[in-house]
Length: 283
Length: 283
DNA sequence: GTTCCGCATGAATCGATAG
DNA sequence: ACTATCGATTCATGCGGAA
Image (cartoon, rainbow over all chains, first blue to last red; front, side):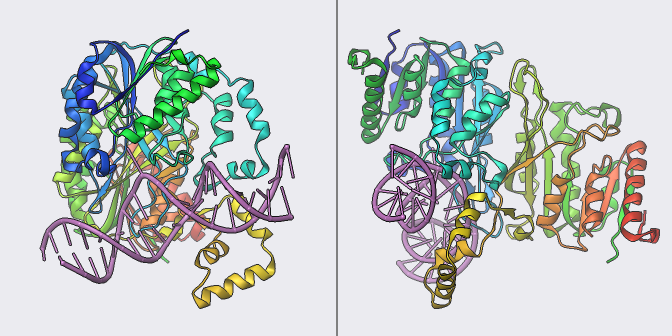
């Protein structure tokens, strides 16, 4: 099956207006959190965050199919010793736009940022907010229950002793990265708590999430040939996974470095998958 | 040390007014969720939940010491296929009352209901909202530290004796700061994600949480002899744990069955702890 | 070719210092 | 007073060099 990876360089609020109505099956994105990525998005102030996001939310609503799903990865920020309320205010505002707040999953990050403070512990979780346009939406639950194939099993056997020891770490009672992701998926039915570590291997983009995260949602909410959109592409993790899973993908990124990085990475994936048939790539 | 367990039968909104100002160090409670416990609290409708809770929040604010903490365990409810917003609206409303929303911890319920999920994921987490009156509050973090993983232990054991001595001496001279930290450490601070199993053994009260939950907060925010309050006592888990940890406790419960159940259970605990000195109990 | 150890480094937060 | 910058703190992870 030929699937397309469409990369767009630009501000998503503007670029989204060029996409057709009801053309996207799944939106998975992680917008810049308040006060972060100041170099590209101007470091949105927490107090301005909702107003900044709402026009984008409006366009996302327009391009999403009636039975599609919107997954928003977002995190709160401590401001002046208190948890800022922009996330929960955003939920209320998006509902007024017409979005249905159907579910909230928790992403538990085992390797949260270290540090010690007199009045709080390390922040080790993020919101995964699910929004829909209608109460009936596409969902392929069987897809995330399928046990992993030989590829993953082969990888498990190749793990070094150190890795295996690390993965039995009791801190946080979570699981380590490699083993647990595959093992737990084999053994347990999923819940709305996802245990995944952030990946640190991508040195050019500081805020990547692990491939398992978009993979989970892409399998759950789309089928092969469907369209996946990430309006804040970053280094392109979502697009890369969509390609691997035979879904069409559109990624928008405002920063040229990340845009180029994503293009390069997806090309190499396509080389691997299709053994050199680069014509599958569009731009 | 003599600690008191004070049981009050009645509606907490009314009974709270009888408590003194600034007399409580920690409030840990799990109020009836919307639409649940309809027989006792009249089954508060989700839309009315915030208005119902606010007068109670006002009284809790009054009785809490300036450096005390209020932990609110609450869970969202799905209404008409959508996640209801009463929890986040309650956060905003409590802030207007003067509460600081200092933290939100996640209670990850490891053994949520097994089996297949119907139309959505199994719900495996609940909010643990932390509110304070001031940015400075009492917190004893060492009390809840977690043993570190095998990975670090394995490494430490392999250090030679000379290495240990050398690194220790470096501390005194100001060198080798990082190494010494690793050497002297076998425990790590927890994160804001709690991994606790739910208890299934108490059939007389429907909304029990495990003893480890109040225990964690009581250790973290109080010392022996401090005062703990649970305005929705239920079967008295919080009070029981407070007694065991040598904290004074006040529990309010509107339903006579639970009130009696809690009294009976705590009395047996006190029998065990003090070998029959029932005069420690007041009521 | 493996396994193991050392080291750098984060979607962070607080408190002190400086303008 | 109020904001801006900087140092100190902490631990899971990946990578590279060494056994």
